[in-house]
Length: 185
Image 1 (cartoon, rainbow, N blue to C red):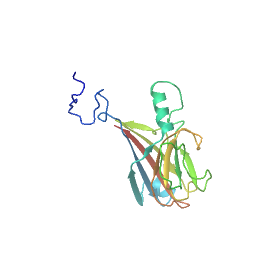
Image 2: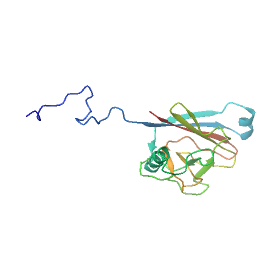
Image 3: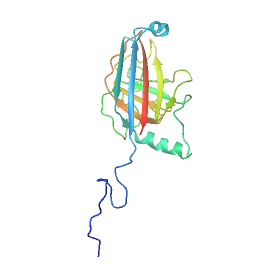
């Protein structure tokens, strides 16, 4: 008798079953690249000659699935200090959720994975987890256009996110510090 009466809600996008857009979780990635002319200038504490900050990303299906598995103790390798590797590459293909790695060729002239700096990374502040690696004079000397955090030192690991943005071309002798911060809200 009452089945044709519309259900009103203060949330426009809420379906009659109570599910809808309010309350959905978001993932945001910030990539910060700090650049020094040399490893020595970084070690001296000199200011970087350039700092680039870029936001947005694509959460990768494989990484999101592993994050859920880790939350429910279903197993898997975490992106912790002993297993997290930041990857940079020179591919500019748009990021897509189904990707499973950096898209650049897997050689030292096109992509590079590097372990975390010291023991402070990764670290969490509120809803943000940050990973940091420093690429020295002889590593990752190519155009930096794609970024990821993986739980292995190559494309065989599970990648949480993939970010595509042109951050410059690293040349031999320079020291670049990559920070990748993921916020869930």
